[in-house]
Each structure stands twice: as C-alpha cells, then as structure tokens.
Amino acid sequence: MINDIDPAGDVCSVKGNQVMMTGKNIGDLLTAGNVSWGGFMGGFNLQTKNSDGTTGCQRATYSPVVHEMITDYISHHNWFQYYASTANPTHARPSSLAAIGHTLSADGKTPDPANHEYDLEDFKAVVAAHRLPAVSFIKLPAFQDGHAGYSDPLDEQQGIVPLVNMLQQQPEWRDTAILIAYDDSDGWYDHAFIKPQHGSFDAEADQLNGPGRCGTGTPFAGVEGKPVNGRCGPGTRIPFILISPWARSNAVSHVQITQSSIPRFIEDNWLNGQRLGGGSFDAVAHDLNDLFDFNAPPRLTPLLLDPETGTPLPQSASK
Image 1 (spheres, rainbow, N blue to C red):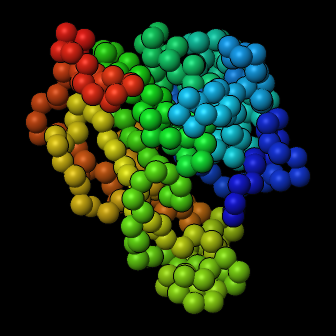
Image 2 (image 1 turned 90 degrees about the vertical axis):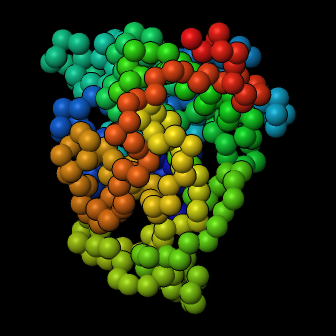
C-alpha cells in the first residue's frame, strides 16, 4: 500500500478509499496459539462522548500544544482492521471486562463481538483489574501519537508517561516489557539514512537508486508466492525504546533491528518461534535480545515521571 488508504468496512473509514489485506498477521498467530492479546486504540469506543460533546468517529480532543481539535481515532492507523480475521469494523464493545484479550466471551462458547479490538480506556480497565492480556498493542489518540502536523512530543509525553507510571506500580510489572516504536516516515526525531537491504523495483514508486529501483536483490515472495515490490528497506533510522525491569541499564544497543523485530520477539516468546510466512520480514529481522539483561536481578523500583515536565517525581511518589 502507498499513502493513507483506510481499512475496508471500518465505519470510520473514508468512503471510496479503502482496502483489505490477505495473509496472516501476528494477531492470527496469537489467537491460534491461544495467547491472550488485544489492540487498544485511542478513540476506538464510538459510544464515548468527550467533554466537548464530540462522539462517534468525530470524537476529538483539543491539544493546547498544537492549538487544534484533533480527531482521536484514525482508521488507517489501526493495523488489525486491515485483516478480516482480526477486524472489528463496527467498533463493537467487548461482552465483559473478563472477555478482553480473548476470542470467546466469558461463557467460553460465544465469540466475543470485539474480536480483540478495544479502546485505550479498556486497557486501563484491565490493568486496574489485573486482567492484562499477555500481549497488548497500544495506539494513543491522534493528538498524542507524536505524528508531525497534528501532534507534538509534549502531547506524546503526556500520553505515554501516565501509562508507564501505571504499569510500573502493578504486581505484573516484574514480568512486563514495554516496547515503544515509531512510524518510519513521520515523527519529530532524527532520520538517518540506512542502506536498503531489501529490493523493490516498482516503475513509479521506486526511484532511490535510479528509475524503478530501490535497493538490490530479489524482493521477497508474497502471500501468492510471487515477488512483491513496495517494500524496499529498512527505512530511515528511528527511535526504539524498551522499558522493563529486565532492560539493560543506561544502554544503547548497536544491533540493527527493525519494526519486524517486534513480531519476532512475540513469536519467540509466546509462539515457539513460529513465523508469519508469506514474505514477512519477521523471518529475517534481528531479535531484541541485546536490549535485555537477564543475568542481573530485575530492577523493580518504579521511576515515575511527571507527565508535564518529563522529570522524575519526588522519591516519595515513587514508592
């Protein structure tokens, strides 16, 4: 896909500019492996009404940083909506708190209407209830997602910090790893060129190394077993942050990883190394082992930050 084509069927998608994907995604593998998981998106619950009265697909939040009303939910940011197997096109609500993260409702028989797709507030609810799924994918509301033009690092900070503070104070924190990843073509951060390792030869889209060329080598075969263009990469250098009691302390890893290292991490930890197939880059992405230190005891003392300033809160607030 090129540009911001919305997932087909999502009630918030732009009409006439929609598409669906085939093949498997990491949610499919987790479901098949009976591993609890959920995608939690800011603005996904269309029944919620914000304080300014906005609701549904138009629910929006005013950002005092960019001085605009920003729509909370952006359908083309919801990765699982592009696959029929993991989509919740009507934004149906989960049947119960206990069903969040699971394919079936609490009765163990009825398919849960949410189909693993929830609102960000649902994530906070399951954390408070100590019902956190094994794997959670979180997307902040648009005004806090750090996207250039309608968000800002300060808004982003005020979205991320409360979530991290909350998780650090849970008994489950000992077994938690937070991975913060960014879009490879947007954001308020340094972009450094990385020599492409995967080739793509689309006559219109690829121009990096000459007309119709980006990178070298044969493109990976896709879900139909044929080479697929449009995936020249890796892209530019972007931030990647691990927050965990098991993270290396004050360390910067120099192992080259990609966004595909995230599904690989999930596959290695919960799915016995099963890969997506169909040309997915998880098969060749480097693992995240260099970010962790499992030889030292976990560092369980919370480091709570002020969402406004980003500075540590007084020590008394961190106990």
